[in-house]
Each structure stands twice: as structure tokens, then as C-alpha cells.
Length: 172
Image (cartoon, rainbow, N blue to C red; front, side, top):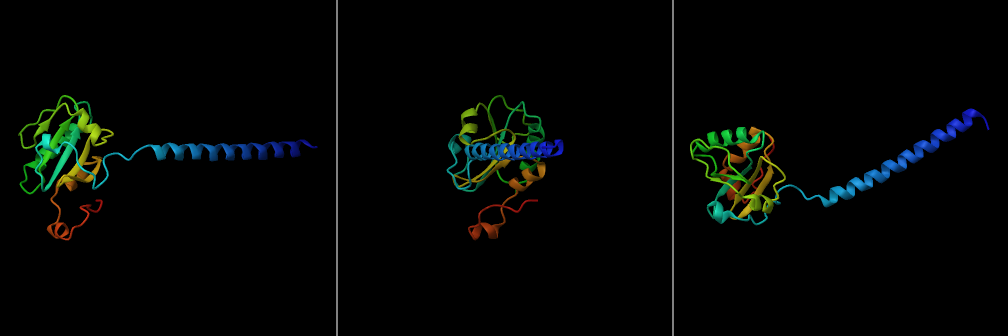
């Protein structure tokens, strides 16, 4: 057997072994992904702890899960305060696992020490927003931008609410 033939066989063997290793890694990754739950409660799930947050039994309310150690949370809280000043925006609650960030005008009730509630809502990290209505989760997702926060805090169009829509707004 010549050197070129041996080298060719070795290359093909290495490529087959690499392909098999990639297939095995892909299967393991998919198995891990299947075990990891989605962040937040799914839409339609019963919203826990609304009574201790002082949420009205009807109508939408935006729950903002924040923490004092979060880099983006002060900006989210500042924008939420600005939005809360508009009477047309949804009522909001700021929920902290530990010590709260300072709130300037008191338009947003602050609840501190709510680590259990954050776990109940399956909050993976902060800032995280949950839109609740009539005791049910309507939408739950990380607040990745202030535009998303504005979208969540805006009241739902009246015609959509009358038609019994899902409450989901198109992504901006």
C-alpha cells in the first residue's frame, strides 16, 4: 500500500469518526434542551400570589421582576415609572427578590423579599416581565429592551379585547 492510499484511508476514517462524534453531541444537546423548561409561566397559566401584590381581580397588570444587582434593572424601572405617569398605561408592580431599587414617585408599588414568588413565576433572571389579567398569565418574557417594556405597558386595543384575542401583540 502506498503512502497516499494510507493517508487517504486515515483521513476518511477521521472524518467518519468526527461525524459520529458530532451526531452524538447533537443528540445530547437535544436531550438537555428537552429537560430545560421555558422561562416564565406559559400563557393561560394561573398567576400565583396576586393577592399579596394587590393586583385587581380583573383587568391587566404588568409585573416587573427586578433585582438591585441587575445592570439593566435601573433603566427598566426608570422607564416603567415614566410609563406609569401616563394614565392610559397598565398598572404595574415592581417585584424584587431582595432589597428594592429606589422608586422616585410611588406610582409603582414595590414588593421586596419575593424570592418565592419569582420562583413560582419561573423567572430565570432580571429584568423579567409578566402580564397578568383576570388571574391568568397573558405574556411572560425577559425585558430585553425598553421598546418591549413600552409594548407590554401599552393598553390592549379595545377591539381585540372584545373579540377575545390572545392578547399577544406583534413584535416591534
